Image (cartoon, rainbow, N blue to C red):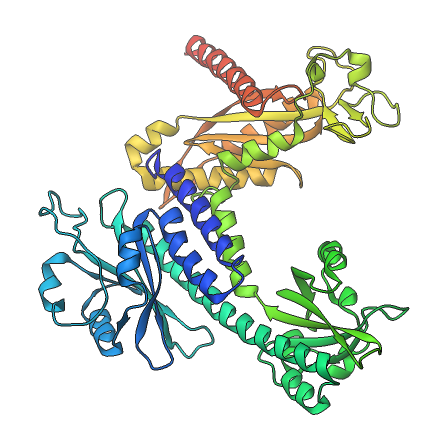
Length: 541
């Protein structure tokens, strides 16, 4: 099993990395994007210095952005290193997958090249993986699209923990470099498209733009383009699409002319589309392809006049962002889910639980008659709707715990705290590999044993929590018994059958409580049950 603190360190790192990647896509220009790449390494990856070297048109690399030290930034920003010197460095470095590391002990061979650099002297390392001021770590960036052309090189220095990055740190830096190359490529594409659109707009302001020039720019644009009706009954209907958009959506132009973007957008994104269907609007949403799948794209709109005073049309630029979105969703999932079992982790559990609880004073102390009244005044439900206009919980459905000990049919949000019995002895006897396999199987059995919509989360170690809404006291007790019985059967690991038991504590969530209070209540009841069952076993023995 992983060390107790490691998942939390990784979770914090993943959150910082996810934010850094998200920031890459908010920059408005190539220069902003390059600086954001450098800043993201300092703020999100734990290095004190970061430098972005960009390949120029002539093949040499220029220091385009620097973060972490204003003196170093003033000294080397704008300096150029020859392509041959850079290729030599990348060839001689130790290969950490796609990263290249050159230890300070090999630094003497770099004295005769012209690669811009900043470093200070320092004492010899005290331990094997200590970072030396003259160590060098490079993350090459390659252009997307399969041609693998070098786009630039990120260099980093001075890890804040003073150590050379391990496997986790290397993977994070390599993933960030991949995302940075996509962001830089997109920034260049946006700059080219923006220049083309600005040039086209200036021509239209002077006189009617040449139809042939526009057709060429439109048809052969490297990313999707569409012209749509603006205003009237046919607002949004696609009038013309270029080949790039047809290929992107897998539909011929003759078919696309039957649709508007509203017909193609994912149902969950229709609101986003409507909010951005105007001049200067932009949005990230999903469009349907011919095979029934959906593709993440970025839409940007501008208005084109047919003549000086004629009808106006909406020119939409459609950019494929599927790869970036997939990485973002992957990072978000890893930040909110347990790496071993795939279940929601402790932070995600608390987030889901907190989302159901308001801080309304006294909400958990209301009378049973008020607490068990639903919006239709039907008795027997543990919820109450607050519809105070303009209040902080407008239309919030209050969660109220059933009246413990009274079988009045009230239902609420049950919180089942599960702790495995005998798990430590399995770890001690058979090792952590077997223990991990047991945790994975227990997670599967718990997930199988609950309803769709219920949450099964791993709190940490051998502790799990189940959130099950709409249950009464008897329902929750029955669920705990079913889940315990599902865990008890033998679990086979490497040809060996092992068994664990489970103790469950049932708590109830209620508005007016915090997530921590709810979990603590269920945890305490679990320990009461564990002690009670332990006494029974001792007497039986």
